[in-house]
Image 1 (cartoon, one colour):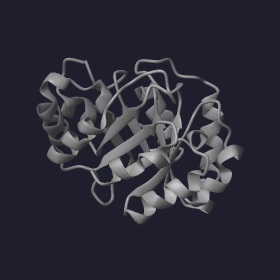
Image 2 (cartoon, one colour; image 1 turned 90 degrees about the horizontal axis):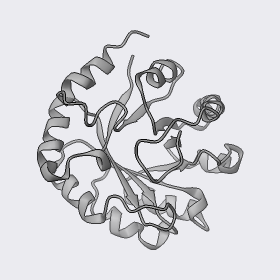
Image 3 (cartoon, helix red, strand yellow; image 1 turned 45 degrees about the horizontal axis):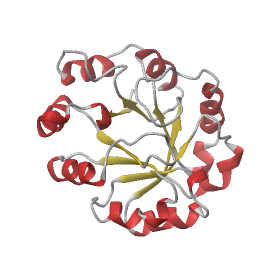
Length: 220
């Protein structure tokens, strides 16, 4: 079964960041998930523009940039100019007055446009944007921190989006508290990719390649 695995780089060892990137790429990661937080849209500060710039300079695989910031239209150019064509940029629709305008800036720059949907945001609230974006990142936890518990009611949202993805031509991605059980249940349903953090990938005292290989060889 074909699905993507993305490394949540806010969980990486920042004392050995270049080695982390190299080990993840050698292990078979598909992309690097970059969580940018401004301390306003979410009550936390995480990765910075400099973190993004450095990882982009040493990584060969694509970046998957998740902007958890207020009014991303004000700073989107700072991020875009440090990315490569084909990298993905997600915004939160609730954080922007006119999200479609910001998404068009992402498209015009040659990036893949995406939206991230919070647990409390309904599919109906973002339905029109689904015709613009190529990726939908569904938050299965409240955004802002790693190592949170899965919110079970979010499963219904995945089912709603899966029913729309062929018509509106977007792919669905899982972010938050991603364990083997979630991949085993939702990959066969059509979820395209999974962001891996402390639940499955980081802090396990085993090579990343071994963990990634085990995930890809799971029986469905």
